[in-house]
Length: 486
Image (cartoon, rainbow, N blue to C red; front, side, top):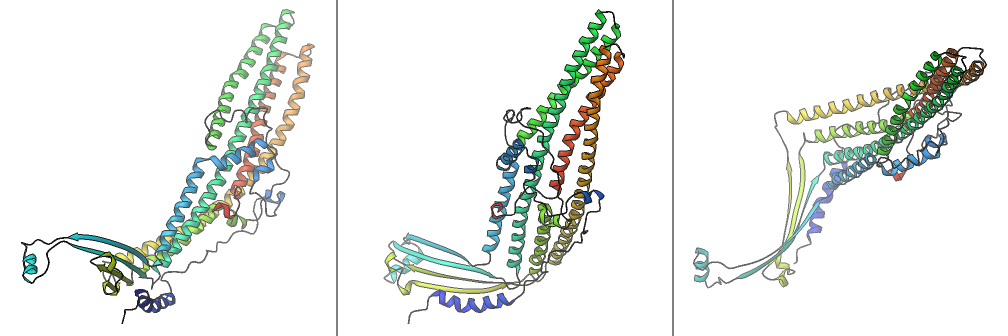
């Protein structure tokens, strides 16, 4: 009677083992997302002046209505090298997850071999074969076979390993998203730096030109005997001081442009045309800023989502460590066919097979296994405490960003009023000086004050936009939760 195939014999043994394995709970704690209390509303008084609806901040740069900024963000999301590295980390974590999942099913190996050999006639076995009438000539041997091995996951070591790998893979996705949030914010900050330095440079050149005209006016009045050499010297000093600032501002524009080029993976000078002073306007702040409620940042901020996944992975690793306290059961087997010729490999008498169930149990390792469990528990507690700390820091970051944005907008508004008043003052003093109704010192002071106010305004305009960008970054804006991220 022919032997039943190995698959039927193995199935008869594997099926009950599989049922036993499926019925066993995995050792170690089952993960539950930690509950971290957060306030119902922001404590800052400025929050009352901001909308509390759920904000649409995935593309915060669009609210600034600056085509150049939108183009830079688009290119950075595609070409940034660090973002590309983070994407490769996601792919690596996905591959590691595949490796962990592979341990849940039997590993199967196939092999084959052919040999041709001749025994020595003068060796002991050769002489014995000759005396018995056997042949000592060359002989062929063909063999093919397959073997399988499987760890029966009775105590859940493999299941916990897969659980940890899933959490790590999901965490890598959140890390990629977090880097995107940071990157796009950095692009916005660098772009605003460029525009702010360009505005300051423009004010410096305008004031230098106005002061050059004042110098000409003092020289005319000196030639007419209406003023002294002192006015001319003061005008020259004021002009030279203003002109000395221009080279440093030009260098600052170049440095900010190069920083932006690096973020986009471009060589220096590649963005000069896009960032030309006349190519775009300064970003315009939106009328309303939406901040949502504190609990929303747990959902939106990818760094917090990544930290939570880290807690899940560390919790699963406790089960992996605890599984070493228990025996490991395995099942292996093989089937082979060995014959003297290839045509006989399919003959039933050429087949052989074997099934080998077994177990292994580390009964004593000097407390190393229990210490490993303790270490895994400590790492899980560290991850949990780190997650809670990250939430507190995130809440403080958002609250601080709201206050900074609100206060800088107020400062900007007052500086705008100061600049308007200074411009009127300069015109009045210049007219009076030309008519001889006031001295040059008043004109000099008015021009200096105007330049200082204009420079401060340009700086404040930039800081206000940057604080809005930082607020959006703190809220987790800059990514979209869809399958494309994965």
